[in-house]
Image: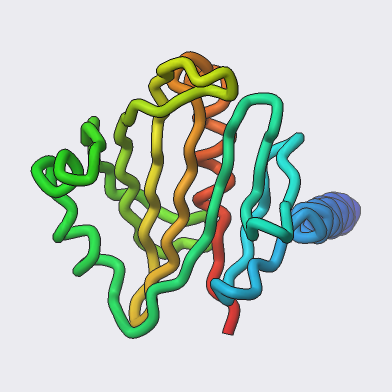
Amino acid sequence: MKATTHILLAIAITFATIVVHAQESVDSLRILITNAEASIIPPKHFEYDSLTNRIVHVGTMSQIQVSKVTNRPYNKIAAAITKEYMASQGFELIDKQNCKMQSGGDATIFRSRFLSKDENGNDMYFIRLMLFTGSKNTIWVTADFPECISKQIEEAVRNSMLSAEERE
């Protein structure tokens, strides 16, 4: 009985060590966005562009931007976003989803579509994801990527957005 307890304890300690090291390595990927007082873990192959203060993947014309809205709870902002409002801004609202951040907080993600130009000046549809989270202040994460690659990139971008955390 005592040997079984020691084995279980050793397994538990090993598992806890693996989890802590995994968290440390994930957190080492976290990028601090100073003007937003927030951080985020970018998707693989995305890089932080300090000139534009965005996380970009040049090869796919994709980008993520993190902003902060001071003294405005996210749920008030999310409640104001309607299909009509989005249409007035040139976007087609596809859906709205309430979700949980990786840190456990509540959030809302809006998925919309808009027409823009590619690098050759041709018309191209893009998807825009907008995530709103926070209580007193709102963290607003926006991601744009071409609609034609949404199946390949959207899940990774969404997971990155859900990693955003406010820094105090």
